[in-house]
Length: 313
Image (cartoon, rainbow, N blue to C red; front, side, top):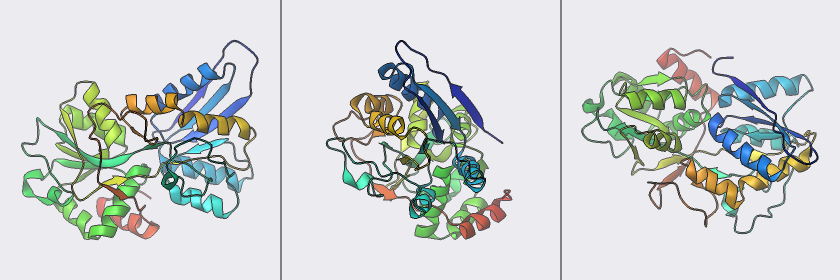
């Protein structure tokens, strides 16, 4: 599978083994590894297996396993809230009581069936060496000065890009992307690939994830994170424990670790806004962001986007 990474993290430590956990995720592997290693330090002897790919491929893999009657993950974490709603409607998600003091209830819209563990925004990344004036809104990207300089990830692969497509199409119509295409919009496979090309100056502006841009800035890239005045896109990337989990207690323990002060600190260090209100925000991030609740593109919108850009489906 294109862009797929299958990682087996056999985490050993002193003391008795406490079981194993399989996580299916679309999150950046280095960030997942940092969290898994910290979790292991608190839970010596735990074995954690991670399947990581783009949201589209993670969901496709899980659908195939469900159809075969042999789903594998103990924990789900990817940018497709609609698929989690589908699983919830089928009675396939375990309800986890909210036991983390101070957790904002609005970030658990599934009523305990899934939880946001940090906040991810789609924003604009700007290479200051390629662009003299940063766009201030999404519609600024239509200006002639950005012709041939703008790119976004593939919504067939990236759940965050699927949210960008759905949210901006709902607000401005699919014609917005037709005009962007006429202005030279390019499509790359994933956010990390796009962010690296932006950092190298192959593009001047990218519609991409804020945390990834901050990670590139930390490496010395000449990038700026711009939260559009008309609203950065708050992308749901919830964590859920399925009913078929072979080790639900360990899965719930990992979820609660993500919401703990240690887990929230790691998120902030890696460029994410933590979900807990008392956690520190990431370095260089503004105190507040004007956010739009994401709306994922439906099949018809995605099909039209694919036809417009000549993408496979």
